[in-house]
Length: 170
Image (cartoon, rainbow, N blue to C red; front, side, top):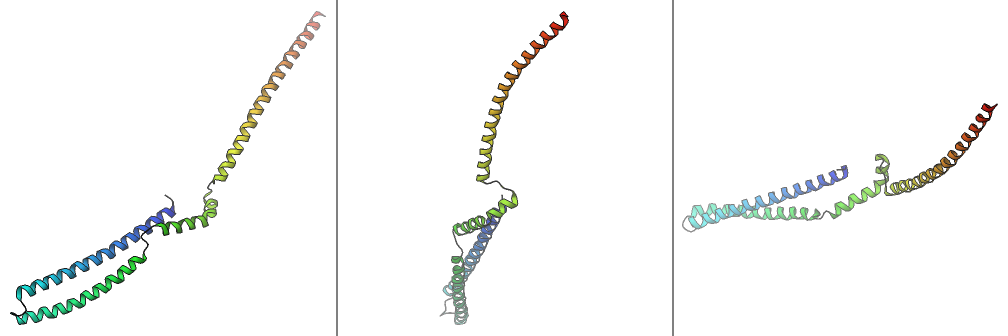
């Protein structure tokens, strides 16, 4: 895995962690607020505000405080949702930025890492074809030369034997 891919994965993982954090924070705060309001509503129903005036005043004060907390929580959730909406859900934007970076830096990466491009490979293939053809031509020429040379050698051997035979007769 190359460093750019690793960086992209880490960025995506970080974004997921941030989104989960905000979701859990929002859902836990909302559930705590719902639970508290349900408890106070239950207390109002059980105790009854008319029959227990002291208790009713306490619950009324608490519910007023809770209504302020609920408004603050809804404002906080709106701000969080606004921040979450700014985070791109799709990875297309990040992918496009990574592609643009790689396109911009590709020449440097190729040079620094001594990478071969498609053009380099095609040039090497062409050179290989030329060398293979040259070797075939050389082999053919060598075989022709060898045949010619063997005939010459046979001719020299005959002439040498003839010369040796003439000297022996003398």
